[in-house]
Amino acid sequence: MKGYTYILECADGSYYTGSTNNLVRRLQQHANLQGANYTRKKHPSKLAYFEVHKRIDIAFYREKQIQGWSHAKKKALIEANKRQLIVLSKNYTQFPRSEIVLEPVTSTGSVTD
Image (cartoon, rainbow, N blue to C red; front, side, top):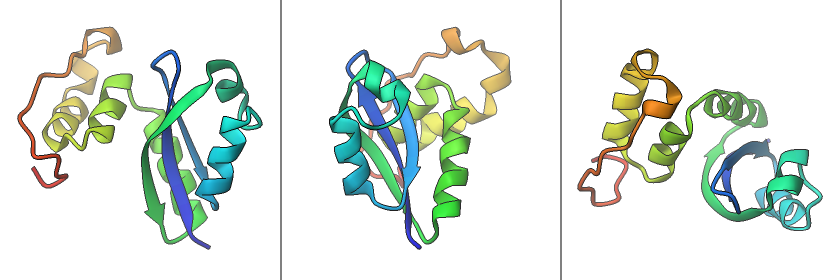
């Protein structure tokens, strides 16, 4: 069964990461505040990112992986900033989360930059 990993941007600027086998239905649940407790409190404002996977268990694994990331790294993923993802991955243990700052990178918007 196909699965989806997704990131919602909430009204306060935070990100919610989830996985589902029906993205449209799950987004409707979040919009109607019937989703997770986090999104009921934070009010998701938009779908910022999603991935399609061959199986739901892969989507769930990816959800757990992304949930462990800093806000900056999630933002780099959403913006398809491959260079910044690499920097944040390599230097994660060198900087406390509050000190990680995204540097502007000229990009065509392509994941292959």
